[in-house]
Amino acid sequence: MKRFYCSDNGFVECDAWRPFCWVSVECPQQDDVRFLLDDLDVPPDFLDSLADPDERSRVEHDGNWRLTILRIPVRNSAGQSAPYITVPIGIISNNEILVTVCYHKSELIADFVDHTRRRGIHIDDVANFTLRIMYSSAYWYLQYLKDLNHRVTEAERHMERSIRNKDLLEMQGLQSTLVYFNTSVQGNISMTGRIRSIYGNELNRDLLEDVEIELQQTDSTVKIYNDILESKLSSFASIISNNVNDIMKRMTGLSFVLMLPTLIASFYGMNVEITYGNHPWVFWSIVGGSLCVSLLLLAILRKFNWL
Image (tube, rainbow, N blue to C red):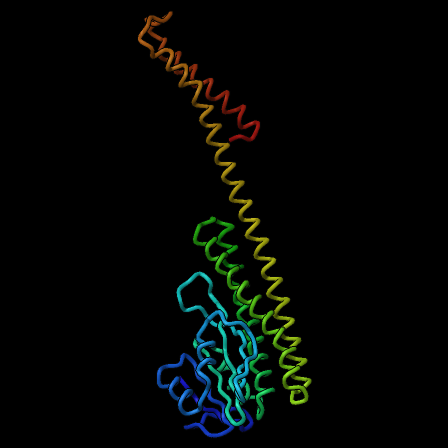
């Protein structure tokens, strides 16, 4: 779906395309692609690159056209374990044309438009538009990281009561999200230097510094959360191993407690003559002796914390 925005103290939606307006395309359909290719003459290679969900952050040129690819976070709607993933968004520009293309639905674009309206931000050049998008991406990375931290806390609380496969898979999914975030944020950080060299004096230096600070903060937060999650997963793995060892120890102790009475009963159950075999109290004597042996072994094992 495509939308057209004009910058007037914030982006305002307009009915049709006009020179120097911003065309935002999310989850493009066939008519959106035809508009970009036929009406705006966007290079088809640019759209092919953006259709690849694994495309890295970079800048590409085709004549007077420039494609700037950034990685932004989105909610994962594919039903996989990772709650968030990162996808490419392309900023395509050529003189009087400015287009953003993302093949996934994101919360970033709508929030970015609302933010420019609330603050009355006027953006009339590609350089600072790119920086604003990067700043917004850093904001959403941090928002999703807060939610990830909350999910980790909830999963940890559940695992303290009972460690289930579902909880472990959820923790692994959260770790996968942090891996996506780490790789993408690193790519966006490297893009700030590339943008600095391309646009030079066109950039708002204060805005560029703010973007670099936000991205560095995001990168540090991702690494901290990833280290914490790895430590917790390692701790839970040790707990699981210790629980298994404890169960096996208890099972071994119970087997030992039952082994000697079973052995005594086996001897007296043989079809041969045994001393005092015809005594009227021999059965209860065997039962009582076996019980005494079991209780003695149980007391010994409990003393050494085997049961």
